[in-house]
Image (cartoon, rainbow, N blue to C red):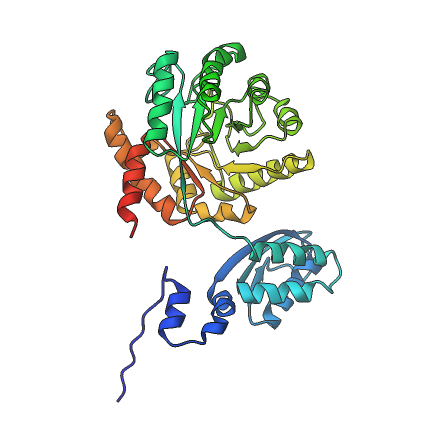
Length: 376
């Protein structure tokens, strides 16, 4: 009697696997789409929309789950979960184009969803805190000469970009006046200009005044950890200068964000809030956007891990994703920065495997050394 051998192909390279079994090389690209299985959640469908979507999915060999009362029409709205390959999603989209109830719009969005691509390389963003109270290096670079030296060291260590902040936003910290932030930041920007440094630089600030003064001096990225919530003038400034913006999620402000943060579904709630802010930004003509789920900003330890474990959910926004876990308290209680950096690298190695676009770190050299070890 013949015995068959079975092996689940998990996290494998599908193109390589197809080649190994002798599959037709001219059709590999299309075949991979049939192997890329996805669960796609669609929000706020009417019963009519949900019923048509479900029947369309079934007609192409996929499936679609909806609220049990969709068929009776007793509910006003239902979410749906489509279970399909990329190839099947595209077939669903092509069939929805001819359907009523605005499903043509859903068809276009499904096609865009299928075409989302990810970078294979995670970029390492070094941190320069010009503060007196940052949680791991407060006061170390408050002196302008020390700040310049550390900036150069981050470059020498291999940073792909540098994030400069003059206001600590650690839990329970107080705001820093815009003028004080500028006193700390502008000398470094003058140094960058004088030395003709072209490395991408972001400025970590919630202040529209700081952002405008910075953007007057060059093509800098603004990293607003409040996601436009702290200073209502920030979106106007970003649009005015056509600047690139990092929109981060935060529940509350540093003074209170860690006072009993509560979510029913942290990944979904953070995702939907970021999606709302991205749409708001795009409506103002702001299109150069990076998103950050805001690890440690109004989240419990379990919330942080849930987001990190499901970080790929945020790729559906079709925007670059930045994550900052460096030396944060949820990693452990060690007071030694090297220990924290090792824990940081352990988490970031998983994020790199998941192809996150940017990771924000204190210890650039450790991360770059690790990346070099992995190179073949």
